[in-house]
Image (cartoon, rainbow, N blue to C red; front, side):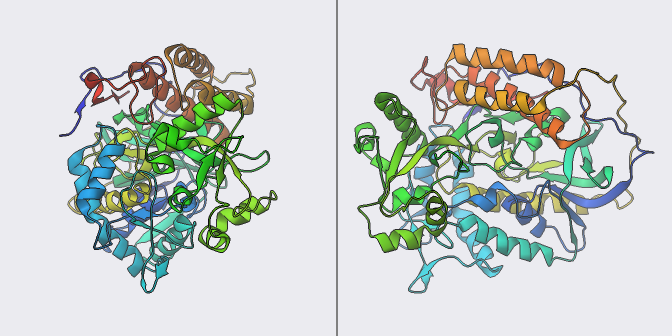
Length: 543
């Protein structure tokens, strides 16, 4: 049975103007496409692959085509491929991790579609790791069977994105605009008609499309400690919210329990697969603590492990714990995790012998645009897939390696659905006289870097792995204060626009977290430490 929507939708009211910048149709160039895809992660590339050859598709990406959360995914893709594994078990594992907030029908749909999508990736050139000719299968937290398909040991995302990028670039009907910032969705009479984009060497362009698919990824940069790349600033969530689309479950930010914690190092995650291979979590005293918190030990779901680590850090008065693989075969460890081994070696650590300092970090936004089983949002003409969406698959806590799977399944479905609708529309669609006026410019300078750093630190302290009413209220008050003089401005470059998007998303996340007075999945309220049956529902928000 699927959770019901909250009958009292959350309606924050201080979100600034509808559009971020001024524009006029007579002073901006126009471009047209049948299907516009915003974002070039796995979901976006899979959506582009589904656009029929007789229709034009345009991918707009903020950075290079391969710069996305998908590219940094280490663990792999969950799929039932072993004859001894069962679809029912993958479904059950997903539902258990999701803490009674998954849509069971969607879970079944995605899990059963997984082998087909894996075969597509192989057909398009993805080289997954194999043993004796068969796909090598790993195990990760929350899974009851070995079902994680991986590539190059711990670099699955990079290999999948390599193959998909080559595949999409070879499609004659697909064009790509790289290094292009999408500011806002263009809406006319309650329907999405395309997007307003900016490029440093071209300025503003109005992109018109019959159908638009949002695949912009996550919001990890709203936190100081995150595994997400710099591009993950919640642009898609924020622009869709400004356009009137419904978002839900925005209180559910998943924190990866094992993020490399070394001064001077990027906050790279240490894949769940390390624990699947037998790595142990120990505290500063060398004590293995996970069995004290859960009988599954290191293979408990991510929310359980993150909570345990935070508790153990407090007990030992230490800033991190350690991942220990010294009891495993050294050659196998280095061969299985070459990317992690190389990164740690830069800081004098041998992952086969030395304990690796880790702590939780913001990793995956479970909430996003409400979509149906085809990827349709609540805004006519707009579709969404991947981390920017809320499909019902993850519930209150995403099961490891289900994210790339969801990106493939819903990328395909959104691409196919948008194609079908676009094909039924007349070819004489045109630009609309839509404009946004200039507002009076403030002469008071703003230190955007300082505000952003203050925001990300505040979110980590008050809306991190553990939250409470007092901390959430304090954070929300500060975010609203900053928003009061940041959101109304019209900036001229991405630094300002990203900050506006981060503030918008932070406010939505804080408001939802304040409203959910219980602990469920990745959302832990120390003042409401247990789940409550009346909260087996979604929190929805719309402008």
